[in-house]
Image (tube, rainbow, N blue to C red; front, side, top):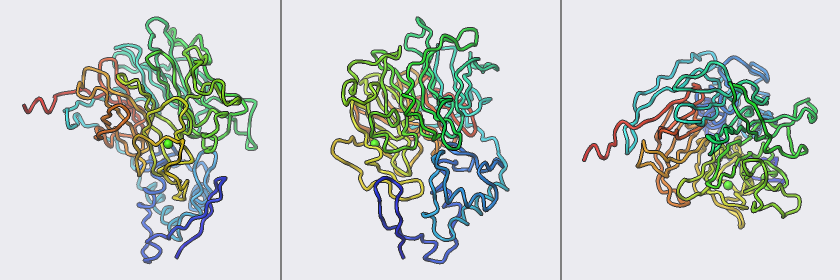
Length: 482
Ligand SMILES: [Ca+2]
């Protein structure tokens, strides 16, 4: 038995989907399995939330109970990026998921997840320390010096961690953010010459008071500012990147929002597709892009779209990205790497080059979250292949490249964080090729950011539980056995 479904993209897609094994064999659909396949990517493996809301906190914003849940799952919530599953779930599967959710909500008893004192990798025994836990959705960490770190909390707070102590009062007067869906205060980055100029950079979801949709929802876009912190107050703010107001949209997901600096001191930042896929291919739109600007916000004149095509945004460095939530520059090769959160399957690690098209949504190794076909193409002429891709999706978020003295054998390796898999993977690379992958951190929380501290330790920013951990080397396992 087959079903014919029609995709909702601008191309009318027609494809054949076999019904589930459960239906054909007359076995009751397994709600837990269906949940893990269809829902866990956004709502968390344990329903604790993540990119989408918790399903066990008793809050049902879009309708509680069987009817409310059924309608949300079937119809989706477009502006938050939740697809409609109505056509893709077989008879009985919708009920099985709802029964599973109701059961789990009833039984939910959040246990603090203990932190191991040590973990092992192939090369090191590693000490794990809790750095901070009194945080709400920490998103990013960066360092002013050996004593001081800055941490963003997505609801809109910038926190200071000094000598291992989280200051109780957030920095005052930071920008107002739209904390809805995946938006809020996202990346923080410290100027490469902070000691001389004191600049700190923030990426966040910025709303236009003047632009609303029919539901009175404000239009937003990722915005980049810099400022100083003076007496715990955000001051001297300069807006470095604000997209043309006509490009602001009212979805609430795929903001990208990482910031990095290259050796010349230029600033790169990412904006996800905002759930409007075709815009990732349109260089007159800011979304679905990696951008490059000078640190004062002016445009490098050798950016690839400065003069052509005429309607292009001159800050664009590369395009065809879905949601780049990790960016890092390799300290030896100067290659700009990104990690992109894919759809269902198709998370990518890319070596980014000026002017190139990374293919989204024309080519992908993934499917839509509801299982339907996104594109038939994994490759097309003129579009870059990912350096490395994942299927199924770990939910990539957060990237750094090791450059310290604590773990000398890891120098030049990529740390790739993942939300859904709750993992940090270590990728060994040679130029733009990935040679080896090893999971270092697993199941300690959803990984939002990974950052190498000034002292060479590795910091991992976790959500659910919301906390930051620090990894240091206890012993080099290989040398210890020689
Ligand atoms: Ca791609």
